[in-house]
Image (cartoon, rainbow, N blue to C red):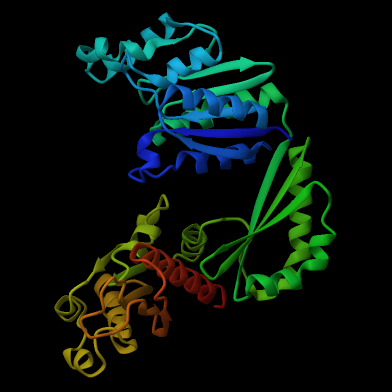
Length: 416
């Protein structure tokens, strides 16, 4: 198997001001074509540091991909480091300059072409992959049969360069096997117990199939990855193994294809022609965000509401003030009345509600940080649950709770 090394260049990554999402994306794309990432470096934008890291990377893998450090100014250290490392010179590439000019013209910014002209200067020996969503091109250098791609750092520029140009190039260059992946989502079984339950099946998997356990909240995703020269055979082989797995885990399986819980839910809602709405407090709109992340969600999601203040729960969702006074706003009873009010407000088959304390301070009623009650209402049936997750930071809490609610909903719908 080919091995890759990723290098993220930029002081903003090292300082923590910017999150490196590029490495995660690139590693996943490489895995899909059978290339394993053996090392990821995050380094400062200094010539010696870049050159030293490139030297180490060439010892570790056959493919090196750098992101970041490509700017429109003459003091672009990454490009200089590449030229020095590969014993090359930087020259104006007319094709890249014309592409840059056309890019600026389409955006009505030809006035700043001269300022960005430096982007058209590349190492003379490099092969250029044009950037259709930005000004810095991708440059590829080759040394001793090993490849080095240098990309800009902006994620929305990196993704199309990787998916549309670099991945197809690598597949052809290395004559790579097909990779086929399937996800089986299991709920209600802890990972360690699940591993014991399917151990015999796992040990009997063919050599070209591998299994990974990926916990997400309280769900475990079993990822089956098959590699080989015939894509159709791989698909059938994987399906056969999944059919052997299903009797071992029974009704704990909620999906055998889609990965994200919101996509699994979308399929069920669409197939059954059900509608859903949300009334959120402590999750701050995260539930609605997840549901609407799928194309076509307007077909089943007419709307949601974030009633953060207690008075808005009373005013808009018709939660009883007496209920709040008796049980407090973070309570099973309030969650239930929020869901009922939400379902009536949006006239949906399903309504989800959350009320809790995301932190960092205690709730207005003194409830502990990490406490949440949530209700799933399906027609006239209500299921209310409590979670206590005091160790989670605010945003992690919102995400975990939202994931758990959608997971519970999928389980409920599958049971009907």
